[in-house]
Amino acid sequence: MIDIIDNALPDWLFQEVEHVSKNKIPLFAGPTATDKDPYWSFGVPVEYEDRGGETLFLSWLAFAKYYNAKELIRARIGLIPRDIKYTITGPHIDNKNPHTVGLLYLDDCDGETYIYKNRFDWDFDWKKNIPEEELNQMSKTESGCILYAEHKGWSFDKNPDGNYKDFEIEEKVMPKKNRLVVFDGSHFHASSTPTTQQMRWAINYNFR
Image 1 (spheres, one colour):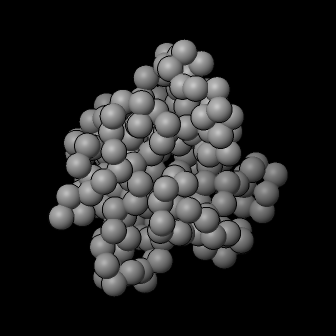
Image 2 (image 1 turned 90 degrees about the horizontal axis):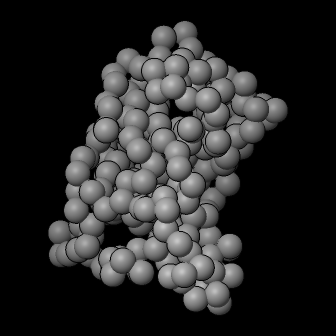
Image 3 (image 1 turned 180 degrees about the vertical axis):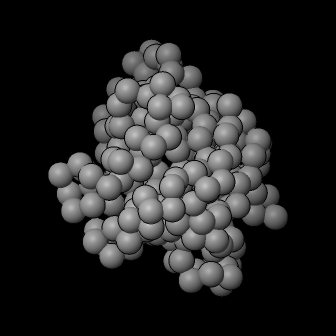
C-alpha cells in the first residue's frame, strides 16, 4: 500500500504546520539517513510538549483516522538544502518495530522520495542472525537497517546513474506542497537532494 494524497490537510492547518516548521522549531545537522550516508541535512524529532508540537500532532490526527492509527510514535521535521549534484541518500527504515510512514511535503520542489520493493522483516531474529558485537554497535544507529541490509546481501553501492544496485524502486514521489505519501514502514526508502529549489522541507510521521 502506497497512498499519495494531494491537498492532504485543510488550508488553515497546513499553513499553521508550515509556519511552525519553518519558524518555530530549531533544526540540527546530522547524517540524512544512515551512518553510511555522507550527505548531511537538518532535522529534529518534535515532541508534543515542544514549541509547535501540538500543531504537528493535530496535523497527524487529520489523516490518522483513515489508517486506524492509535499512536504517533514520532514526528520529525526534515530539511535538505539545495546541492549542485543530484544525490539519492541512503535507503533505510525509520524504526525496526512495525509502523506506518507518512511524509508531508511543505513545498513544491525536486528531490523525490524513493520507496523500494526491498522490505524489512518485522519478525527478524536479531540475536540469531547478527553477532552480539554487531548488535551492540547497532544501538548507536537509528534502526539497524544497515546491519539488516548487509545480512540480506544488499549493498549500498550505486550504479553509474546514481541509483542503488541492490534496491529496486517501487515508487518515486515528487514533493508537492501539501502532498502526503503514506506507506508501510517496512519499505526501505530514501530522499534525494533538490537541485532547482533552495530547500526541501518535509515532515516524517511514524505511527501505528
